[in-house]
Length: 285
Image (tube, rainbow, N blue to C red; front, side, top):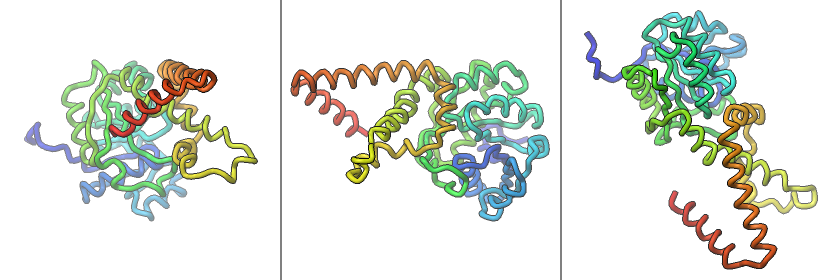
């Protein structure tokens, strides 16, 4: 019998959604386990063949049922508003010992939805690798995307302990650092450090007009880099995490309004203190 404490090394892994994140998981796992077989679940097997040709996955299929027959792990890498339904579909098609995980950047709604399906609860550990790019598509996937990056696992109260252990071992194969949070805490913190910063970046991008476009420099390109992300993907994130995003937007608006007031009243002392506090926080990273 296999030692229950031995490292989990899956022989077959399926990636449902071979984009930047799904493709990078595939490349990372293939680098860690050279003999693993990675199946890409794609919308068009004919178009998906390019990911086989480029070495992202070993084979592709359009069928969730066919892909999940004998896999050890399924990674759901769809937009966040599709994750729960795909997890439930995979749970119904996969073997009892299969681990199902995901890469979504919101967690509360996903975990709550999956909790309605006992078969899925027994197999699913929600995950969010905090890594990525404004670029999309598996052509940008890399094996080292997650190396040294935080991967947040957000088990529910129903998640089996041994399943969580397997999820930790699986995600360590990508080179990431594992952090465990509740789904609610994850969404609250991500609204502050990811979701609202993306909206703020988009707001700064929208300040540019035809007359100022030629004056754009590196500062503008740095702060607006994430605004180049897929708008449909970010709409889904905002829809899934509305309460936490609304609260952080309220805090941001209050801070910006303070700055506006200091500018109006020439309160340079308060403005300098605010800028210094922000620099101290940024420098700490």
